[in-house]
Amino acid sequence: MAEALPGLRADGLRGGVLYYDGQTDDARLVLENVLDAAQAGAAVASYCAVEALHREDGRISAATARDQLSGASLRVHGRCWVVAAGPHTDALLTLLDPQHRPWLRPTKGVHLVLRGERLRVPRALVAYHPHDGRVLFVLPFFEHTVVGTTDTDFAGDADSARADAADVAYLLAAANHYFPGAALGDDDVIATWCGVRPLLAAAAASGDSPGAVSREHRIATRADGVVVVAGGKLTTYRRLAAEAVDAARAVLDAEGPPRGPTTTADRPLPGASGLRSEGDLARWQAQLTAQLGGDERIAQHLATTYGVGAARLLARVAAQPALGERIVAGLPFIWAEISHAARFELALTLDDVLVRRVQLFYRAHDQGLAVLDRVADALAAELAWDANERAHQLQAYRELVALNQRWRDAPAPPAGSSA
Ligand SMILES: Cc1cc2nc3c(=O)[nH]c(=O)nc-3n(C[C@H](O)[C@H](O)[C@H](O)COP(=O)(O)OP(=O)(O)OC[C@H]3O[C@@H](n4cnc5c(N)ncnc54)[C@H](O)[C@@H]3O)c2cc1C
Image (cartoon, rainbow, N blue to C red; front, side, top):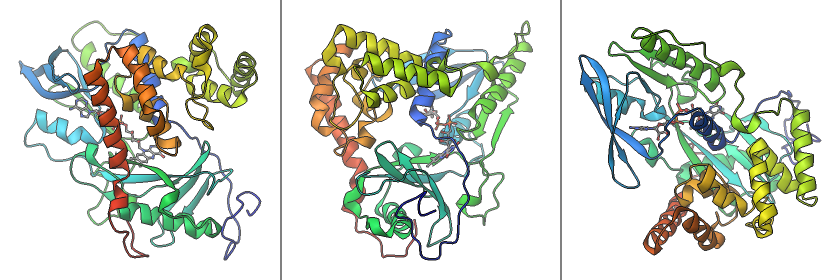
């Protein structure tokens, strides 16, 4: 164990178990699915919130949605509707039925990104929190380390969930317990990330701790033909999606000719098409390394983030070599990725790019603030922002960073208290 995880607390250590698991970039996973849908002919619209659903003969026939960026209202017509709104599921179901009783018991989960130069783990550690025995993870995260998560009941708007000082203290206490030599403090936290789990309430008894609530999903077709997806995990998303499509097909088939079978089980994400094995990926990465003049780190980043889609980035670098320069020294992101995100990957805002596509928000020590003006220039050129829009985008991103760091303003809770 000491060799597998240098710095791990030796006190009381008798052994460990090695097992294998997957790690993913959740935003990229979602994006690849959205890009695939668009390639398959779907009309996709981000930042559009459904505000009302309209009935005709007992069935939902249209929705009114508001574009959160422009304020414009759109009306969408459809014969089959699927609610897949994560922690917002109950809010959508309340639009359908004001008497709706909640299906979910949402819990807040926080991760910390810790400076890699202060704690670096060559592999993941799964352990129990020293205060309350909850399972937690210390994970390699590119050049840094992630520790998480908390799991606390959450009420309110899921979009407003943030890490607070108690969350950070709780996670730092665990990291310091298992890696006492690291002596981590608040200054070692680069960023926090926080989400709300859409856990199913039905499976939970009221006295259960949040961590004991089921991670299973539920797919139901309501009497008005709306298919509802609730709960679930990233790990099982393909199975869940296939079940949801089957449920939607059953609704549509009842009204028209039956459709062909779903291809979910065999369909690779766009970046993975043609990359059937680890060997294929390694060969693709080697090819990218050669094209990049030997820079393995950038090649690895491009190959594992964009898969075969990296070819488009390299073509742009070949035409304009300055686009191949790193955005921030020490990180593998290159300038070509910024305009690529707007041109090919549906990015509309600075935080679309820096949080969910080019992860400076989590991986740059200043969350990307030093290069923000240049990034805004590149996006302004791509998205035709005028001076007002550029200023608005800069302000919105700076506010996002400030919100992410707000936990520092509150006093840390007494040692030993839990999140
Ligand atoms: C801290 C944490 C750790 C986790 N760890 C793991 C893990 O290790 N493994 C794992 O498999 N899973 C994990 N999960 C669970 C996983 O992230 C979620 O189950 C998954 O993201 C749910 O996906 P979803 O598409 O159902 O919901 P979401 O990803 O929340 O997507 C719902 C979407 O609906 C949109 N929406 C909401 N309301 C409206 C509206 N009115 N109109 C239009 N759109 C709307 C939202 O904007 C959002 O884009 C974790 C979750 C958290 C919070």
